[in-house]
Image 1 (tube, rainbow, N blue to C red):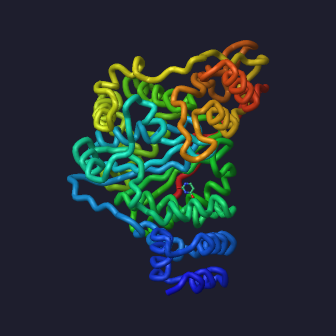
Image 2: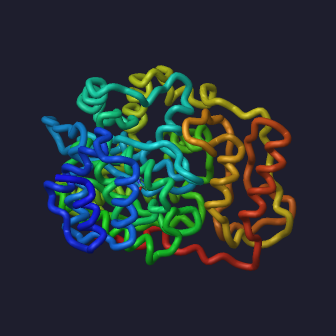
Image 3: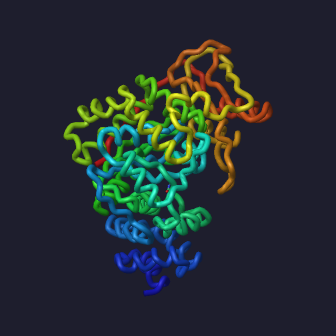
Length: 433
Ligand code: URA
């Protein structure tokens, strides 16, 4: 086999075989395929698109370019993935809740990408925590605690690492086929038997329009099922932050509140909806409604908090974090309110603008590999539809310096619209699969 022939097939809208795609993915992982060939491959796939079968074949080839985990555990092995948003800390809540319900959740997560936050950065806001655990410890945590949220080992889906880097510099990131193969190759390498996808839509999402979010959800669901993993997706609203906070330690604080003093919120609603669908997909429950009731029990009983605590301690964090988290989380130097410039109703919150505000404060990365400041961001963000008087706080900002605070305030105010009325859409917009 050779790379030019496989690229030519894609260029001419012919279907490469599974064997050819396996060969190409192995070449991406080993370096046998050059950057030029990887770029041409990505561009041909991006411009011509892949058939459903070819998308499944590419996903499997990329998954199999490295280690694929197999499990022998006394319960279902399940996972969740979100396409990313603002204040989206659902994974931190859902994984211990699912573990408390008797499932096993080996969750390989990512860092912040663009304007969106990443689960690993949030976890590492807890002093001492390192999400870089080796495979043996990942397996042990999953078996003994029921959940583990870690970064991908370098030998999992290595073809994606290479192709992603090439896509980033060849204007081919946007291809739904390549996004699908990229996300799923990593998720499926962790060996789940069922997967729920949270595809965000709206101003804080990668795919802002409902049309684009639906196309991505459909491609992901069809491909994952085609690759043998029972999968469904919920399309959920990202026209405002999901939690009332954006920033790493600030979102951990929201999670700790939810785990230790649970009350209804948009975050809990989405978490329960995703978890309930997943328990049904995995055959643990038959009805989503009863699954949601069952899943909320570990929140109120404190069992999910206990599991979260064990996971944090195992990753190097403080013991008994759940009882002591307020004292442990890092605090920014400058903390102050952002007053409403006029009276009215919070009519729009631009998620992308808020996320970029956090990145510029140092809570995310402008260049790969940068260290982030876990303490910064926005908290107590008012929900759409809240009526305010002039001067009332719209949110609190947490910044490293007075200068950063001034910029962050400007960025936030540019992302908020105060008007006559708000029309927030449904939180759960649609189900796919
Ligand atoms: N996240 C991924 O892992 N891959 C993509 O291509 C886009 C988002």
